[in-house]
Amino acid sequence: MLTGAALAIFMPACLRLPPGVCSGDGGDLQTACAVLGVAHPPGYAGLAAVGWCATRILSFLDPAWVVSLLCLACMTGAAVLAAAMLTRLGVSAWVSGVAALLLSQHALVWQNMVIPEVYAPGAVLLVTSTYLLLRYGATRRARDLMSAAAIFGFAVSQRPSFALMLPGMLGAWALIERRRRHEEPDRRWRRAAIRLAGILGAGAAPMALAAGLTYARIGPSSPYSCVQEHLAWERQTAGAGRIPEDRWRQVTWVLRAEEFRRFMGADAGQMRAKFRWVRSQCHAYGTLPFIALLALASLGTMSLARSNPPAAAAAWGIILGDLTFVLQYRIHDTAADLLPMLVMGALLLAAGVNHAAQRIMQAVQGVAGPLKRAALEAAGALALVCVIHAFIRYNHATWHATEFLNKLDLASLPADSVLCAPWADARVAWYAKLIASPRPDVDILGTDDPRVWVAQCANAGGRPVFFTHGLPPDAAGDLQFEPAGILFRATVRAPHAGGS
Image (cartoon, rainbow, N blue to C red; front, side, top):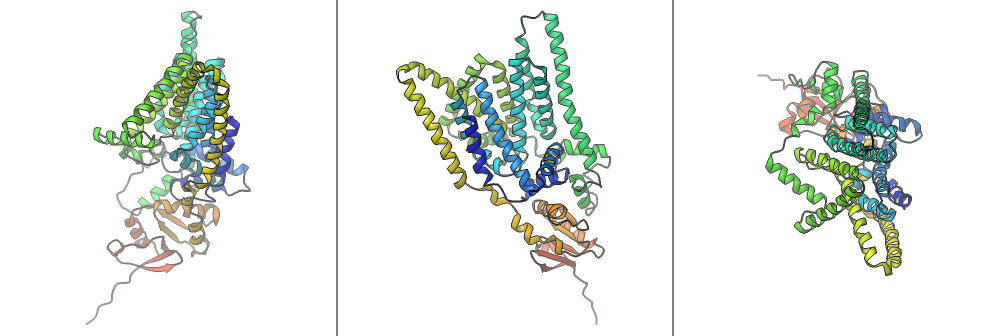
């Protein structure tokens, strides 16, 4: 059942992937993976390293498409691994498979299946860490525990907001260790202390590696570095100075995502509005759907708490940690990452459905066989519907920028040109510069501040300057524009010669 669910999710979505590079954050990740660069804060250097290895292994394919395929595999893996975790917790395999299929139908899950973003890799890292932690509870193998800690540490190094989920993970581990009541207290505490030290070491190791890789790749020698890009356009605006000069401080600036910290800190009114947004994303905006959702999640929680308390603790730790971040982050789009909450919420709901189904089967034992057959047929029909729906639902792959990349024609620009573009469009230009049609002589200023573009023209020193967009007269000042394909060549208007 789980294999069928995985194929029903993954295979149709492959045909809906963007055929090449995307604009915005997707193109940023694709470019960073293609050249082992550092994307926008928090840098995602670890994910870039994994993506870089994938693009080297599949070097006969377009690197941008390889990254999109990798993100699809991550989102599929998160859904299917959560279903596998359910089966280990005693939930029926067909209920688990149906839960994975239904989860794939959520709009945010689908978006992260077909658009290359960091949220799908983050989700599969969290689910994998939880799966290994719970497997440690069953097997007592230290390698499962250390692997869970290392993967969770890697996830936190790439998505700092995941640190809010650490109390739940530690709570689940503490519940697992409490089951060693047959051991002497001194021995149990000593073992727990050793394991805790191992957990902290295993979790800190990938963080240190991510910091070291970021340090190595943010310098001027890096082909793609968010720090160097910021410095390039900040030099055009005197007194900007947002980027520290010391390299290790630059690493801290990147890893802590200090550029986006201004969006943190919602007040009570903003948190209430954000919670309503979360309810709408969970299809529970109305009072009755919300109560029904909580009731079913509570039933699943009680079912898990009786059979495997660490599983319930881990699930709620991830949900509450994610909700804490989302309510405090004053952004209402995919950057307010709801995938951890959706995946773990689906796990609790599936456990609740399974518990209710078992009660129903016990009450109607005489027709249990026909009901099971009907349930299996319904699961097969659902898989077919999911496959068909994948071909007719909204295709986020239309966000790809292949046509813009082709029309940009970076190869035809004069030597030593400068290209000014909004940040989202500049990702496509960077991909063209580094991969599609390498032009090491072309500089790119990717910023949404037109003052930087105007300042670049004034300081160009004779270098050709091109804009992807024209500027209104009040922002253009003394600039004049000449169409050059889809670009505009910008020059400073010569002063008017006066005379008597």
